[in-house]
Length: 72
Picture 1: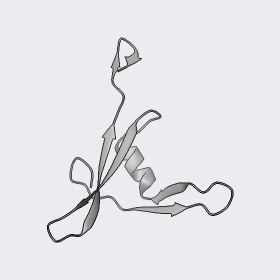
Picture 2: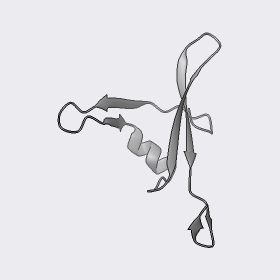
Picture 3: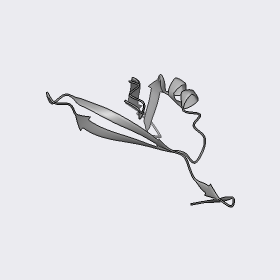
Picture 4: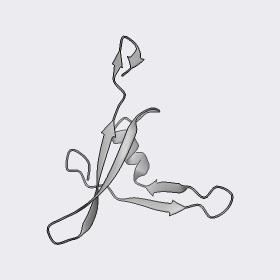
């Protein structure tokens, strides 16, 4: 769920061969487009539980803040 309450569903897989890093797919490109993400933006996934103990992830997007052309 993002900061607006929108629920997103992604698929996360781990590469098996030379580069065993996680890969996020499915609706990830739609999420990137809708949030106008760019290089340097930070995305945080926080695992939470609802009242009945079901897990979900909160997604936060933080864009760099520039002051006089410098990231702060």
